[in-house]
Length: 259
Image (cartoon, rainbow, N blue to C red; front, side, top):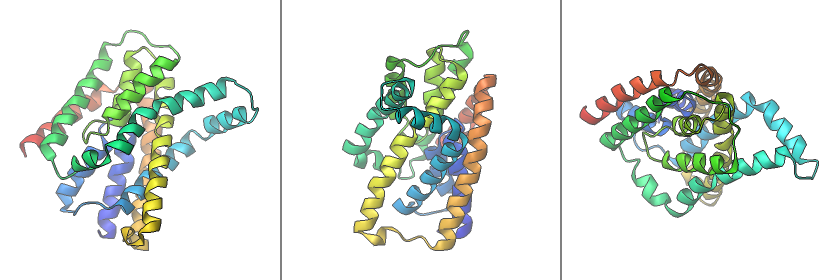
């Protein structure tokens, strides 16, 4: 992988991690367009950590508030919210730990599968147009259901942010709270998977084959584009404009299926 390819795929990852159009699906499409071979564990770790750090920066005040609240060492709203985030990550953690090989097999240039799942994402996003009322806070059962939605988003083409935010909105969760929970809940599995992958790389250094230039290009592109997309997505959700991306997913999904 060259610097230009790393930069382009970094931008794709950063934008589509937060915009509801599926980062995994667009990475597969990007690989096909660029003619890039299978992306290694090194690049995957790099760009996912970059986008996670972008989310941390955007929600730094909320994260700081949670941490300070938890330091009081008594059960309070901070502990409750953090536990809900943890519970929401359990379904995808189970899939990642026990079905890793099966999931990785889906990321082998199967563009018709990507296209089909993009159509599923389009349906989810379109359903948000039927919402007539929001304003609820996230309860324990909401956290579990949103976590299950995130689990299904391991499929290439199903948007993680789209699935989780749409699911929350369909349960009449407040728009800002839905987006915030969606972007914070992903930090646990991303950093958890990055830790596991880093251990694998430590035991087998050959798994890290990226040069310094390629690493910097991919990380910088993913971080900056992720920062932009995360900020923009908060405004999009607040304005109830997710259905715009439904149209986009239909178009790209059909192209992927029939191209």
